[in-house]
Length: 535
Image (cartoon, rainbow, N blue to C red):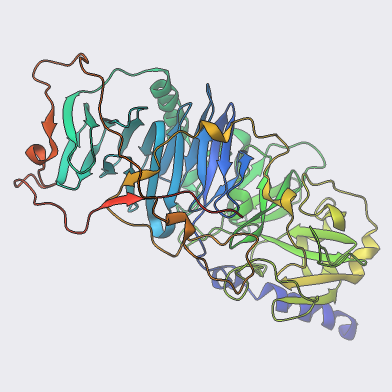
């Protein structure tokens, strides 16, 4: 009897890694934001392909992606547990750099509200064609880039620093600043805050929803997207793991089934959930099935550092598949996956040693390791009905998951995949939904040049999906576009409050500490950002 149990026991130890495995194996990868709200038609230009795709709730965003809202549409981008960017209709936001809790975004056109919901340590800079804005504390910051190139900044609450080549100006709560003219010497006018409109009230309503959330009582603030859990399930106490979250779902539901596998740069295959709450429970923590309760999500230890993962599952397969020549190549006739239970080892298919896109290779090389196993002996969740999701191999990465029936005996001879997955992405893999792109790319009418106090780091640069792993990125995203004239000028005769007059930047260039005028900021230049080249 002992001899029969020994192989399964050894496999369990090798794949689970013991009680500390969950904390030991994960490491910080590239920063990822998410689309947390969508109303109307919203599109994203992916930084790794330059193609416009239809936006979707819970879609991951990375450095160099662009978000565009159509007429009558709105959206919200969440960067962490504290920072949210909300776009009104006709707006375009570019994620210039979101690495290392340093968020440099460029508002090319339209109106955006940046909300700092909680006091955190992230450094935020909002770059526009004429000035840049740095929120300095918890608050609400509205920024508009008008069609004539002028910039309007309103601080509803909090405080912001306005940067120009001549220095900085502090903008306090309840005030609006309007900048016009050439960025090398813009004119400014400060006034009382502009009246609130429907977009402000929509943003205010969203804030109330976020502030009512109780889920962060049980979850580390390294984990974001947790506010969505409150209205879609309940927290219960368990003897093994303490507080866990139970989603309100129908019979037969299972984690990692209502959604699709999409490809993103660096991480490769990433889960995009169709569940409205489907961000935090699919990129952090673990799932388990509790008798009498059903599926439960354990967020992990609250006092432990947590890192984003594209999915927390174990992959396996069986049967022969096609090769890796054209489109989506798969190594199995059937693909399967199972959500990892608490303390089961996560075997990444990305990161160090894997970055650079899919390698056309055989099943077993330096990146792919396939071992025959009995899935139910390795993954605890595979022992429950609906714990395993299985699809036809040729459907992997081609759209919504179409779960098929399988014989549980097939799990006894499945092949466990550790390392890079033997599946290559195709064009279908780049989409987050089946919806067509309704926002016309031509609507992106924003300026291609921005004033920035800081420069994007190189750590977030994207690799084109068509580039081979050995090729180095040539920096086309930040190539200068010369010969473009700065937008300047503004229609005269706007109504202003008494005493509100236009001033040159040098006349109001005061340090953040209020100790007197600054000298021109050394090293600050107008950033020129041209469009990326072809795929």
